[in-house]
Image (cartoon, rainbow, N blue to C red):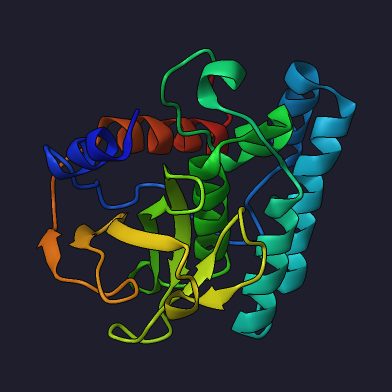
Length: 221
């Protein structure tokens, strides 16, 4: 799906549910979840999921820069794989557990996993946005996670292409298009800041993602 079509999906009928999935670093993954991951994906996958849970418990209460850096590094070790190859679907938003356990994913999966990790660490949704951009060096649609220390400041960008966390105005290889979280959709201009376009609505990919995350949390399915 090209950048224009992706943004149309976001803008037409978009915006996202308030996040139904809520958690914290102390109850993110339980033993039952680990056993299910092992059964479906194998021992290494279950160990990797447990390592994610251990990381978040270790990071709870630490400085935000440390949290951002280590979450970014943890997920950037994952392999990039296109959805059509990995999930046999044109567009699929994996849960963090699916992303870790399956051993890879695309840019949306990297960004979503980082987003929910930071939310589990207690970072408010207002400080986090999943941002659709155009990666100019690759001439392709791309997604990153933006962190806003304050609402109108230039955000920091967590990315799987450039693994360094940099302010958006230092990423001249990215052209912002739209950004969103569980609370709304924004026109992403001026290094990631922008006018809010909507604050309610529906996005089928987001709804499917959060439903699966709730099922994982409740050990259903």
